[in-house]
Image 1 (cartoon, helix red, strand yellow):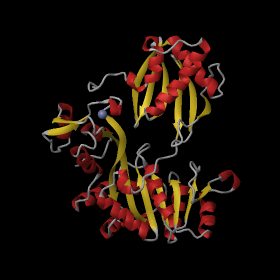
Image 2 (image 1 turned 60 degrees about the vertical axis):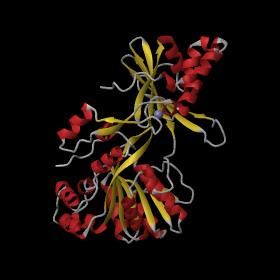
Image 3 (image 1 turned 120 degrees about the vertical axis):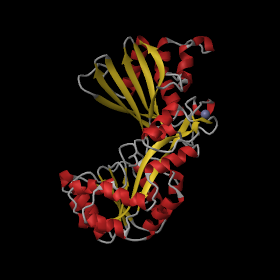
Length: 422
Ligand SMILES: [Zn+2]
């Protein structure tokens, strides 16, 4: 399956790897000093490799170190049992965890100083879970979501960016960012917020919880135990006279009702919603108790998205389309290109062939016809067909266009799990 690259990417952890091979020039230090260093080297290597998570997994009589980079878990190094155990214990000490394996999951954290002035210090959350093979450790770098200077930088096309601009310039209605977990919804929303903050508008958020403070924006945290739920929070924030309101994730009837009451009051509302594609927000909102008239009256723009890895520009290669790509394209009756772009791997991308990610989008601005369909309780399939019939670029088409341009590979588009034509 994964024949394109070796299963272990020791190059991702050069410092830890070098320390394990003393002949490479490193002087032997005292035992304790060496051990203290291993966790530090691993953190430094992981930061350099742009990892979001480090996993230390017991595996037979060894330990596997894996890194999550650009959303994918990559096998990096195998350690002897004793070495791995020592590393786990170092992390537990650093994170203030009980060194004894606990019956349930235990969680601690640590901060890591910034390597230079250009970077911020990192916060790491360390979770230890007892598994059958031993204790497993997961280390997550807690980073605020990235923001970009404009939607084009996210990977939204010109036309989509114009739709977003139009919505932002108008007043009232809902803008929803839709997609599964890990699709980059928060980054998109924060990028839009960032633009609003730069403008002369008044922005208030109601979040549960407030995950990241944004300077220049009034953020309110839902606190149901003290009487501040979505309903009461909405009433108080409307008294602040905002132009734009952000409700983090719309995930229950309370937040859905708050969203329509804000959007119905003539303010612009932004939120995220779990849904597979743009028209899928309609059934998601119905499930959260909204009626067709409420949805139709307030739905202004839907941005559905996924994240795919970008091919490394320094080593990507165009060659005849590989059988596994031909197979899936033919299976879904799509045109098979004679040639396609593939990852290779070089020093610039740590041999992965990919570096960073970009968004694949589907932007739906409901037309009067769509609103009429909505009021007739049309389902997702009917709404999707209407979009396709008027030639809108759906997510799969946007992804295939990005693969044809060499921005990403066909494999990444296959993996993103878009709704297929038909
Ligand atoms: Zn490369």
